[in-house]
Every structure is written in structure tokens, then in C-alpha cells.
View 1 (cartoon, rainbow, N blue to C red):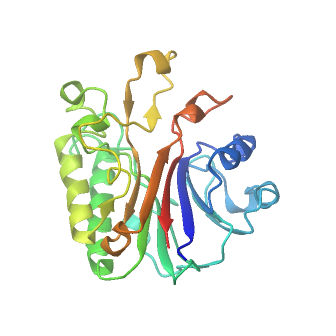
View 2: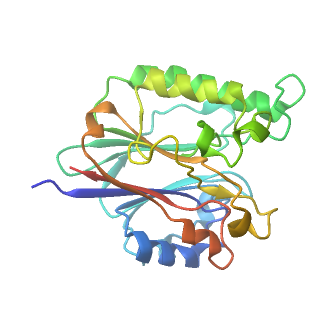
View 3: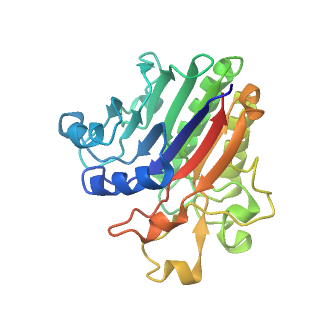
Length: 270
């Protein structure tokens, strides 16, 4: 009988500040594996005890003080992928790869936090946007070398809303970082070269609005609903037929001391 594997991704925006919210997330989604981004925590201060108390016995973290950082929390064993690249040679803790001991065989899992890119969508004048485009070029080239590998999952805050209805206004956001044509095209190449399938849009039609992020700048975020879909789950083609369901947990945006991102979950039937 196939067994479910529930993988969730969440930009937690400080794992120590929002550690109590992991209990709420676990109660709502019961993930087998939870991938975090923007943990903002050096490894020596990672709140391992509190996370293990929730039942996540297998934990890997790659963090730094005050910025970036990724972590994978799992109820099933995994092996760390030590050989994955240091993107743009910056050592800025934006990617963690593991091989899960999943039902039916290993699953290669990658947790990414793509650079946001700053405010000006011009790499000639904005070093942050230049970094983002370089990062995307590197992961695309590397992903092409992994494309033939079976049973792959990629998740994370990819900081790009690629489709027209992944943003509240396609027309008004065309020149806003995260939805510019150059970023959307770069993400398209990443998906194409890596042979990735958008697991969430597998269930949700492209013409339906879908968001995972609402800005802190908008106090009444729920009423205006000016969101963007920045958080993604991709699977390799051999897992597309194993997709069982998806869930974007919008109620998390209203939690006390909420992140501006909400968790996204995909369930595979393995």
C-alpha cells in the first residue's frame, strides 16, 4: 500500500523568535518533513531541543547570525548531501540538501532560499539583483546535471512569483522585483533544465489566484489580499503521478508574531 509523505516549506523569518509557532504548524499540517528558510540563527544557537520535542528527531541546519539560513526538520531519517555547491561562493546559507529514507526508496530533497534581490530590478545598479540573477544562473546549470536523478523534491522561498495569478496585480508588478520578466524567465529556465514540475499548480489552475506571502507593510493584509506566491514545491516528473494534495496554510499569516510567509505543504503517495 502507498504511504503518504508530507513535505512542508516555510520562511519562518527567525526560528528562535517563532519557535512557538512550529507547534501550531505541526498541529495544523502534521508534516513528516518541514523545510525552513530565513532561520537567522547560527548553528550553535539553533533551538534543537525545542524542535526535537515536537517529534522532529532528524535535523539539519545551516545558519548565520541575523540573516538567511535554512533548516530541514524530519520525522524520518535522512543523509546530508555534503557535496552540493556553495552558490556564488558567498557561504551565505541559502541551500541545504538531504536524501530522505522515504517509503519506496530514497528521495532527494533540496531546501532553497533564493536572494530577494533588493528593490531596483537592474543588475547594473543594484548588486542584490545582480546576485539574484547570478544565483539563478548557477542553480540552473547545476540543476541540469541532476535532471536525470529520480525521486527529487525542491522546496523553498524562491522569491519569484512566476505566473500572472501568482501576484495580486500582474500589470502593476511587472517592474517590481519578484515578478519582473527577467526573473520569471530565469525561473522558467531553472524548471525546464532541471525537469521540475510545479507541485502546487498541479492542483491549482493557473488562472486561479494563489499567494503565500503578504507584506508586513500592509496592516490590513487580509482585507486587501495583495499577496504573491513566493514559496514553492517542485517535484521530478517521476513523482508527478504520486502527488496526492497540496495546501497553502493562509491562517498562519494571522498567527501572533506571524511570519510574512505562510507554510506550503505537498503530500506524496509513495
